[in-house]
Length: 81
Length: 426
Image (cartoon, rainbow over all chains, first blue to last red; front, side, top):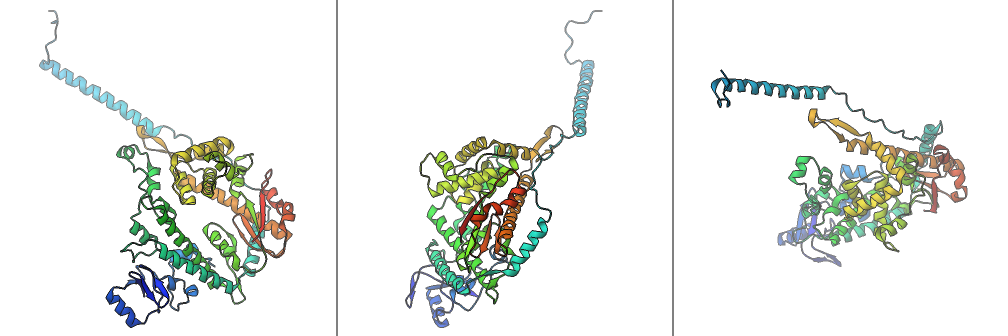
């Protein structure tokens, strides 16, 4: 899985994304993503380098894909059994 | 024949005599040194003082069983959560998280910085040490001093990010804003994931949890269904430590202390927070640089070590029995190290800290459990959660009217002492 990040300000529909801001997964069609990546308007990071906030908090962000929290986060920050 | 007045200098016979004399002298000195060394090895060890008598509360004989039964009842009952409210609050906080992510500075080449990862943030800021704290000099290293200062210079996690003083304060605040929201959402999401089909969340977290998770839960109290009342042990740490030490003074008001320390009539919130953290540090016997770090972590600001030490000394004078208690405990954590002439006493700070923290935490847990049992006795079936220092009840109860009865078990366990209770709707 990868995380898409806006490079420089960009506007998609009525949403504005600042430099360094994450794009929600599935917002753009794949061919547009590929073109913007080639143009340098987007950058793609592996989730090992930059996790997706949308996928980490899928129940609250509305995206379908999920990304797991780390073991330490699950131990230290969740309500537990 | 008379002896010459002046002995011939280094005549051959005299040279041999002198060499024999020097060798004998050297052997005698070496023998004395060896005897002293052997005597040092054989000397009886300095007797380490025993721990002063650490008071233990007089718990009811069936305390363990009763608290286990209460925990079972709390777990089986669960806490009723409003799933829709939980999702709505989660979405609101997620928007806040995105906004905080947008606001946090990344710089031109910072698109790869993952604000959810401390390592990523640390690397981006190059925040590995507190540059404003002087590094240990060679002379200090050789003398074995300055270790505590060297230790607190390190930035090892989110609680230490405030030490990155080479960054602007706004940058650190923005990063903390993001991090706090992130942690809150992780906890909130876990609540959503664990709610049963009957709308209740069952977890042992509600049976005596403490620390950061309890703070996070309180941020999501709005999603707990029903009428809630919270009963808190006011100034629990002060009461437990002063009970241990036999300190009879009234519990200090952080606002009053802040007025004294800062010399103002109306101390600001950061000043009161710093004073509160300093008081807690004093009660837990933090001193010097460890105290500075503890206060800094609690306030996320860079306190002045000299001022903290002066204020701590003022607290030590004001609350002499607490000071004496800590001194007596500390005295038992020195051990003999080294041999012969290098022998000295070394303070076992790690063991001391572990002992003190465990003792205080155990007392806080026992006091909190007694509070929960006291409430359950008066308002049967009403307790839905108990944490370190507080109890949550559901229903239209008025525990304030029954505070004497509720506190009866506490008073019996901690004789001669009265815990103050704070009751408010949640």
